[in-house]
Image 1 (cartoon, helix red, strand yellow):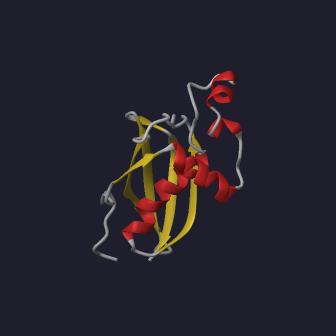
Image 2 (cartoon, helix red, strand yellow; image 1 turned 135 degrees about the horizontal axis):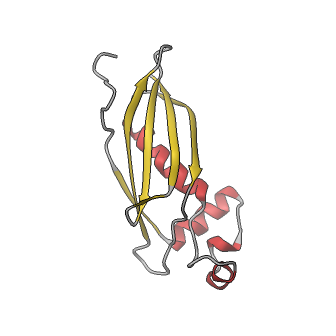
Length: 133
């Protein structure tokens, strides 16, 4: 494990989330909350527009770790701090994802501190993944 050090950056990932992605995710997760597909409903409850599922955003951030390919993702947690607003166009919402090695733990696992940003602002807080090499 000497080739991995605290502070090492994982490869960044940029993902455009479209309304079509929201429909596919809703079907897979059985989460048909109208804030994720109905513009009038989302605005009616005080949101700026349709928003991405928080768990979709979290899953995309997890891809930073799994794409790294170092080992098994054995624990993952995050808080949802801000919504990802998804416009009704072909471009969608750009989410920028990154991670860095935060610690190498006594049991040999690696703590990865993750970041997910939309419009330059964090959408996940305290996003931490544990990887077992």
